[in-house]
Length: 360
Image (cartoon, rainbow, N blue to C red; front, top):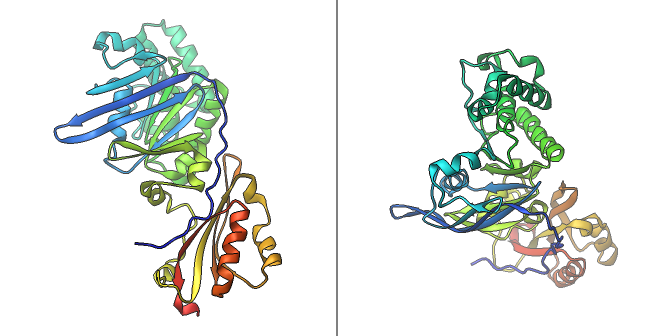
């Protein structure tokens, strides 16, 4: 068992928000044989919000999104879309409700034999709108996603990013209340992914559109989501504002998913650590929000000169909030408690990761 000390939790401010829920799931359960794909999932998405749902393969993401669009029926629990429980609706009753839900997919799902504008207008054709109204709406949406000049082109002539822009335009055709993004950037290169995420954020702001992102990529959540829910084994194991969860991940699943984008102790040092006191005490130091803007280590040096060394770390900005993570070493055992007490007084969360005898 690792020996560690948590000096102080990072405070998360609570901001009241009275926007109505577009989505509300309550104790949703779905089993396939003996496997619990969803095991008591409860969550909500407010109007105009972007919620990222992240988890590893097999965590329950696909079943969750299929319950949201009515392709799967939960065994129990409620799935409310704009206040209406869809779980008990017949297939015929589901059809008008599905038009309130736009879907964008990892592999675009465009019809190769139809032009770009025809692909975008397809949901409106199914709905029975006249051709002139369909094409007018398609032109508006292609302008929104920056592809007006491709209206008469066929999907085969488009890049992956352009295909996804068409997919987004098509998903918006029927003016949905909710946009579901199912791993929509997983097939794209990093530069194109960045552009698509920026487009989704822009659409969210311009249309006040509620977006639910299903992804296994923390960078996607970090880029545009307001809140994040982490799913593992069919359960929501952590949920909160993106900056808060990134600053202070509570579950092991979240910490693992964040390991590729949060500063980590360099491996060659981590491998030397022991839980037996002796040598340099290696600490992780986390701050978030206004506290992360303070000159923490300059102040620590002024109060306790020559008491520590900076090993690794940095400051990121998520949702316009600074999120800091550093690793420091304290060689002199007599300085360890004063350093911990100082950091505690500055609202830092501190963990003793272990001791590096090689630095003694």
